[in-house]
Length: 288
Ligand SMILES: C[S@@+](CC[C@H](N)C(=O)[O-])C[C@H]1O[C@@H](n2cnc3c(N)ncnc32)[C@H](O)[C@@H]1O
Image (cartoon, rainbow, N blue to C red; front, side):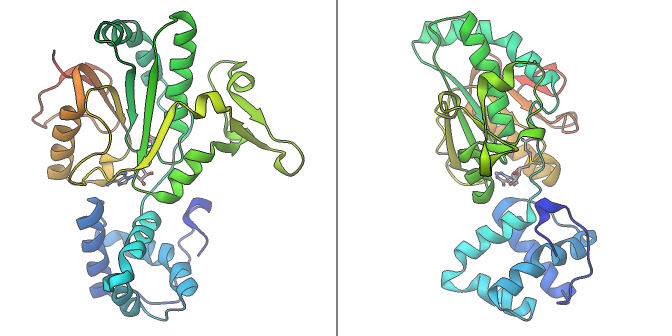
């Protein structure tokens, strides 16, 4: 099976995954990440893991499960979650959120200046970084209009592999589709020679990001509280309802009073108890 970022082709795996081994792996993945793998995901999981087992020289899932429980298995658990998680993203995905962000900035900037601190934004399931850099572009454009407002963006994800890509900030040129002509030249460098067809985020924008691994369900977040804006989009769909509710509570606590939480368009918080005010399509505000 090809790596999942080349598309899940669901080729029948050559190493059989028993229902017992699947249930064990699904439990481990849930315990560590809250990602739910229903029974319908068995072939998908086997497809995604087949190459990993070959790379490790293992002939069965039972051996793989043993590897995961061994003392040195902690890194392999990270690898497993990496392979299981879905990392699809793109620049300015769900574009209305970036328009809303732009409109909120004057008020948020005034508060930050009043409190003598930089504006703080967090892309909490950043995958390979397109979301965080889209936020950064909106901020950079607004900063041009409002001199004197400093800002920082935290970009985090559970996947180390994705975070490496986020840090590098190198993307297929064809996928750098931005809503305004001219932004690509303003914020990206085009590759030449061996790097033809690639584009790299310019250092001035990359420096605005703090990239770090954060499991949304880990005990303490390394990201400071008092965030003005949190984007946590298109990740809650992989969690069950109790995990989503717990996550919304934790993210609410990370927001500054008057700060905003953006979730994916299919992840509205309807039916979930929370202390936020709904104020746009999948946009919520912490009162204060
Ligand atoms: C589909 S991507 C969403 C990317 C981006 N937010 C967007 O909307 O385009 C989901 C990301 O959530 C990450 N993820 C899954 N479970 C996580 C967890 N427990 N903690 C942090 N990140 C997690 C995955 O690694 C993946 O990169």
